Image 1 (cartoon, one colour):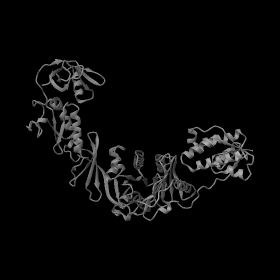
Image 2 (image 1 turned 120 degrees about the vertical axis):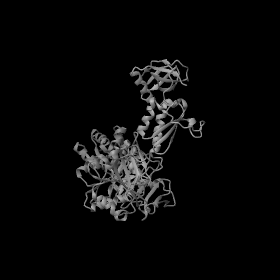
Image 3 (image 1 turned 45 degrees about the horizontal axis):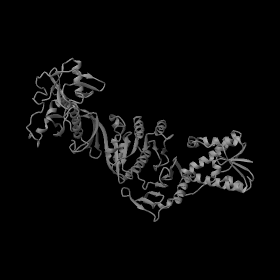
Image 4 (image 1 turned 90 degrees about the vertical axis):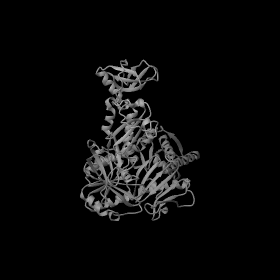
Length: 629
């Protein structure tokens, strides 16, 4: 009799069981190399099934040594790609082919494998799988008390737990001795088996080295080598269940949700009570006759049976969103909105007209809103999120209203600088606390003071304005640049005397352009004019060394013919390396430059001075070079 066992039969010890009871006396057991490879892979991943299977092969080898059976290893070993796709049947197919080629009986504890083999005309003996590690309760249940939020176990360390009231958690040791690997492996396997066998649990995610289990109200992460450096189990559960009446602003928030479908971000630090508040919101909406669904990965919100909890369909939340749009919920609770893809799905569903409540990690209320910046178009943010609720220590700490207004941002004065501004206002006082808008191609978040003006802050418009002025000036100046802000609408720029004309530009054009874009008046001076400098601060408007907007004397200079390349405008100069020269067009000053190696002045194309030079060339103006004074 020839017998080919598959992986499930070897792991369950069904072959040696039949040898011992005489069923397979004098049989030839043909073990496919594909089975050996799969068991080795499982053992390397720290799975108990792999070690059990290898122990069974050792028992079969002992029977062969005693002459009870004949044992052969046959067939081809599955390659890495086949083993990684074992769940798709690649390894099972190799095992079936071995049984068919050897005209042997296939022994299996896998009902699908057995049925496929029968359909292909292979003789099959099916045996029920062994109930491995069956337990009725969570094996680490003993570590949880009424005030325990999470339990943290790892090989070689003393078990710990987070215990206490929301916002007052303590990370404490809950045992005297470290846990050894054998105990950790037993707990890990029992937890996973319990989730598979119990109708109160399921496996949310299973991958090499990591299982995410949901059992009752416990979310358990089980990590194994080589993914982790040792066995680790982290079990988390909610320690409070609340309703909306337990929070500040309960009446106002109820009215707000009932008024119309909203876009809400619930934010806070880890463990602050965000999900607990989200559950209260979900229950209120359900009781208010709204159709409510959830999107979770993993699914651990503690909501009533009327609220269906959806995971990631096919591993992708976009697929879940597509399905939900067919279900047509009034509100969807999205726990948690974390990655760019999550924000995009949240935004798409909100723009489709679904009320959305998203749970977001953030250390400040405004940070939750800023996580949308750059992920969605700035002007769409108030249409996606109109309310931000910040939770701290289990309480509603701050609620923000989010709206758009076309206005001149705080900190700017020119009326022609009006633009769409996102105003973030305190829900309780109605006072604006932040403004978000585009400033010179950058998105800035400006905190406001109690009067609605810009507050002193590193995120304010002043810092951005200073950076923009420095960037513009440093692109043309050769020496040191120092920018000093004088209030919200005035700045002084200090440069070296030789850079004055270059910085101001032809007819003061460059400085005027900066002033118009930023809404800030810019006064250009030399370093000697800076208070405390060598010049003692003699004043003057700094609009050029001779007070003529950068216009210099009438020296004729040397006529040159600039060459335009793909990256530079190049001027051959009859001067020594390192000398400073002025470049003019029809006698009008353009810029000052230092002669480089080869007697050339190179100006990068795309810069402001290169554009002026190219314009002069296009208009066939005479370009000359004179030594700088």
